[in-house]
Amino acid sequence: MMVGDNFIYIFFPKCAGTFISEVISRYGFGKELNKLPEGVKFKGHSTKLLNPDKIPDNYRNKIITTSIRNPWEWYVSFWAYKHYVKTIGIDEKINNPGHINYYYNPKLNFKDYLLKIFDNNRNTDFIDRKINICNHSNPFNYMVKQNVGLYTFFWHEKSMNMIDKYFRVENIWQELSDFFKIPIRNLKKTNKINVSPHDHYSTYYDDELKNMVAKKDRIIIDKFDYKFEEA
Image (tube, rainbow, N blue to C red; front, side, top):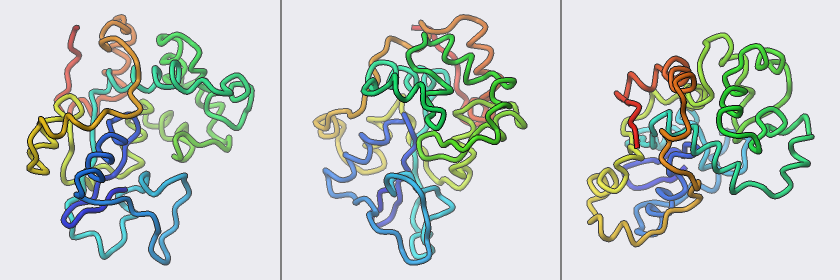
């Protein structure tokens, strides 16, 4: 979580969060909240993953921001980052029942990967397992009962209805420029971080997968008027 004079930025996985945090830090707009106030508990590797409902009371008068991404593109980025980048020790993690890669093997091709994420029969078997994804709680109970996708679970768990301002990843330069009042040419001096190497997201989808995301992540698609766009 990044804190500025009049805003808070909540990190969201694979939505340019590391890059946005770097922009905020580099230009002095804010800094990461490294120490939680007394009485605020959070389990995770960094307070940058703090949920909006855990924001300390003395910060609640600030504008709460985060970033959002087209769901069809998000799944490709989520898969590609693990498939191409996070490969160290992957075989050991795949065989470890306590690690998410055991359930969603990123070495699979994209279609098989996404079908596993959306398989409610398989997910039902994991409802009672002790597991977390990106420092989030077990998602399977919510995903199965609500019949939603992993992206929608992240969005729900982070209390995203509390957000005042969303930075859209597909228009990130302009969104950040407008909010922080800084020229786009200056922003582009900051390198993007933790980029997932992949082609245009549409090239990974067939009709089955495209319709599946449309159904599972309909809440986000409708709220932000996202469309599936061809390359």
